[in-house]
Length: 128
Ligand code: FES
Image (cartoon, rainbow, N blue to C red; front, side):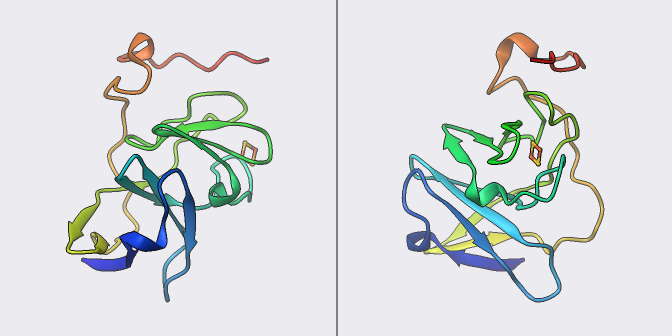
């Protein structure tokens, strides 16, 4: 496990970009006291998701408004179609920990928690 940051470094409703030696930049999210960690770079371009817009368990990319589910990494809206990597979070005291990234993709697949109507489908997001 590696420590990403302290919980008090990320206020409720905020996103923090964290750079650790040897790892891609990470984004740490606090949504109503629940913490999530993903890769910071959008899967559609080089935008930093930490500069995006957090709404519940979804992050909207600041460049082209693609949205991602923080629980699964699934892309929810066009033009984002590829998922982002999500990391399981463990809290140890005030420390936010994730497993040491191995370079292997985290299993993905929407559990339907954020968009129940889309659960179990591989529907391509509609173009707007
Ligand atoms: S760079 Fe994120 S949606 Fe385009």
